[in-house]
Length: 388
Image (cartoon, rainbow, N blue to C red; front, side):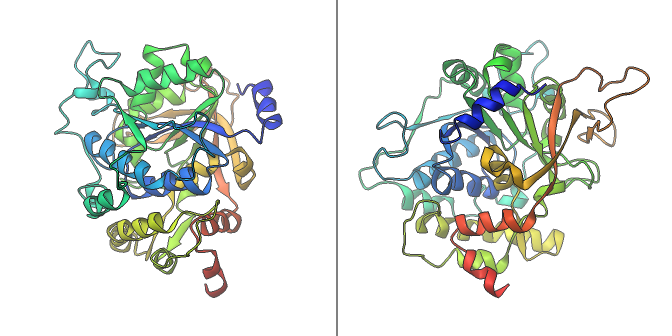
């Protein structure tokens, strides 16, 4: 199921940056992932687009937040990290509602981008109403250049599913998608543009809970529960898929002491480390998010969900993870709606609902110390290891 020739080509071209589209619902932990991608790991990945979706916030807020993050996080060192001199990062609207809320007869999601989203569940109690813990407006002003120029380009006439397919077709076998939210945009991409199943390089999915409870209820993790139908469709159809869920992401954390370090300027704008203005933003935005963790999990810190998925998207970081490969199905009905079930056995005496489905590589374990060191260094807080 995994194209060995394609994987081998990736090894030969390891020095070449990996093109990624980030499909996201920012969100505090999304903000960490995007800042890391555009700054600390900018020599590993080239962000060729950001597509937005409902989840942590409503889609329109997700788009606003993505624009702010790009303005703040794009490294302003000329064109050293741009494939095309002067190029800006596209921000593209995606679905406002899950597949189940599309009108009958709209299987391709023609109305998904402009749908009424009043009944869509969003996690504003986790990330704040604006998604950034109440500090969005302040930092939108901080990150805007004096001349008012933006580091993104936005066209309200472009749709996420079409953008993903077009970009993958333009660079066949080179563009991967890092999916940090529900998989609605990806499901619509493959429905409208089946050729994208071939053209896309890899799909890295943040979602699921395979050997642990979910984080919305005992069965389901939030991204998958946001659109179980889309998740089941995508995970059982696309063959070059990596998945990381709560089994791993809840083991990689920043403590309150780590977060406090973000408020202190490092005074060095070095490649491989998130810059001071973005670190200050992350510190401020994280306070609301951390309070949720204290209240619900009795943990003075945060889980690094989205940044963990970013690590998985970077080939040189994959040795940090332990994988099991098999078909993944998602429950779409009943009290376990949203549950992810991995077939680790593969061979069964009779046909079942996992038979002949695409196989995913699911991360079930991680080298916690090594991965944590990567995060601490990239965020400029590695020295706290000496006092923890």
